[in-house]
Image (cartoon, rainbow, N blue to C red; front, side, top):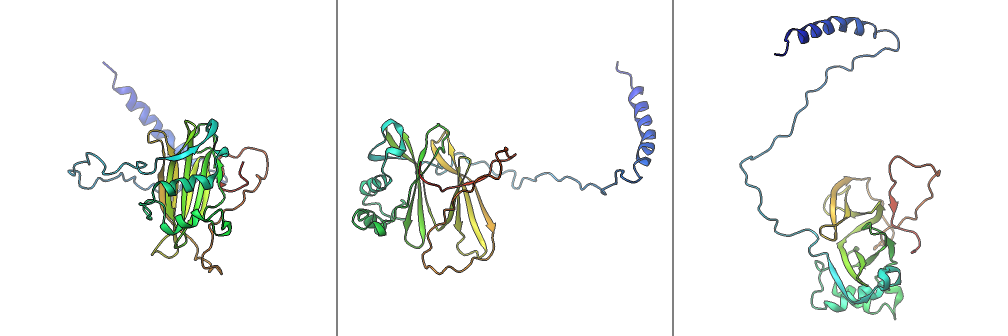
Amino acid sequence: MRPRGRPLVAAVALAAAAPLVLSGCGGVGGLESAGPTPTAVGPVRLWPDLPPASEPPLDYGETDTQSVPGIKAPDNDVHRVDALAVVRAEANAHPDTYSGADGMYEETARQIGRCTTEPAKCPVMRPYYRDLTGNGRDELIVGIRMPDQQVGLRVYLAENDGLTRIMSTIDQVISVELAGRDVIVRAASAGIPGYEYRTAWSWDEQQRAMLPTRDEIVRVKPPVPSPSPTPEPRFVEPTAPPSPSPTPFPSADVLSGEPR
């Protein structure tokens, strides 16, 4: 059997020594009490009898993945692909499904068709390149200006010498940034003045798509009136780091810079 007297003796001895130790901390430079510690409160589950959902109605990423017809990416290199040709191929492949939900408006599709003859009115913005999937190769990032100050944002993965669209979203975009391999989209919050939406899109290996892994509403300063009725989304040029020494946390790299 385990002896029962030793823990009690040790506890009494420790309690007797405690005032001596604490009394030595009351001098200059010693430890001071921060007051009583608040009691920790654990989460409380509401409606514990509610049965869990057996199957979600729609799988995230299911509608965002789509092969681009007629586009080849030799050696799985997106730098060898014309971004305008990619967007035009998607617009021509689905002429009967022009809608905001599908990612293309009929007006935008007509403008894309005239990009060669009217480049100043072309809604397809300059493409960017970044490895978002971690496969060691760049993905193609495309922005498309749309009606009502909206921007369509699309990401394409090169595989099997072709292109697969792995992300598609439309919003009233304020800015688009990169943090590591995440795409951070800041968008206007409709009906909630002084706030904006911030969504982080991340690559999901199981779904083989970019999914909105973090979504939040953030309070911001009151917007400054813009002289332009249709301001273009802001793409800020990256600044050089202050020193070559490593930082404890990776800094957010804005989605900008010259295409590589």
